[in-house]
Amino acid sequence: MTEDVRTDAPRTSDGATPHFWPVEHLDALEFDPLLHRLLREEPVALVRMRFGEGSAWLVTRYQDIKEVTSDPRFSRALTVDRPVTSMTPHVVAPAGGIGRTDPPDHTRLRRLLAQTFNRKRVAALKVEAEAIAEELVGAMLAQGSPADLTECVTGPMPERVIGKLLGVPEDDLGRLQAWRAVILSSDHSLEESNAVKAEIAGYFRELAAHRVDHPGDDLFSELVAARATDELSAPELISLAVMIVLNALDQVRNQCSTMVYTLLTHPDELARLRADPELLPMAIEELLRFIPQRNGVGLPRIATEDVCVGDVVIRAGEAVYVSYLAANRDPEVFTEPDRFDLSRDESPNLAFGHGAHYCLGAALTRMQCEVILATLLRRMPGLRLAVAPEQVRWRRGSINRGPETLPLTW
Image (tube, rainbow, N blue to C red; front, side, top):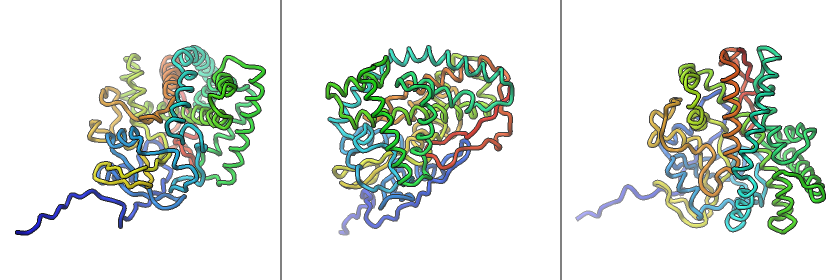
């Protein structure tokens, strides 16, 4: 009798050749071809990027990603001081910050932020955001067409909202934007990035010292008060402020601008939304799912023990990335996933992540995008691109994707 030979044994990294992933910058709504292929052919694959050392696993399937991001056996803290292969020469998230910690420190920081980043505060900010949007869109109308949406609305709107949220003086917002551009870049050197990180950290240290004696009705003042009672350390205070600023300024500008571009280049869906404005919340979710809003992937995790993901055993000590962009195009979860469809009513998108590291600013970003789109659709019934879609310039050398400018007419 011959012995049965198993052919379905789990794969490991032994002898595997990683896919080189240059993470090239793509225009408009073009989806990364490697992500598209791996999702369908090799949903857990080894990749190597331009910087760092070795290779890492890349997980692209929706259900696998939910499992990885919910599994405490994958650690963010173990990435500190480890040169995991990546698309940038520097790590955006600071060591010890909320993005690179595990429980119990991560639980403590997240609970503290959740208390200050609450629904009541977001609801209050929505009233302010609606007034700001009315003012900015009104000024754009008065200026006349064509006008650049990023300069007139989607750039200044998050500046003013985050300024209100954190209590940052209006005169300092330009400096924060300049720092953001360097830290979220994939083109600047490690030395340039570190110098800017030191500048922004110094800024928030000075602001924290001022808030000790002059507290305000803002999130940063609440974090400073938590520091005074030892609920968080000084480095944690600074890293939280930095990450809130970076994400808030970049996400809304890019995501909302791209949402407008998407609607204007899908006239049937835009007409459907204009005919039924109540569809807007559902439209926001489909836009979040459909738009490839970043280049590459976010922060990696390190396996603390051998873990089986799909048909792969990720061994203890190996690095793993997840692609939320790919998860949002998973054909096992979404019908015709590469089609933009405002009537879609399927599984929730993973645009803001999943699990313990789900983005705390998701509600704030959704709110601002909804306010901006509602205001534009109401006040500009003839809104359209002022140039051909292929003439829109898209950002280069940045982690996040979005139009550099978005010329509009009405």
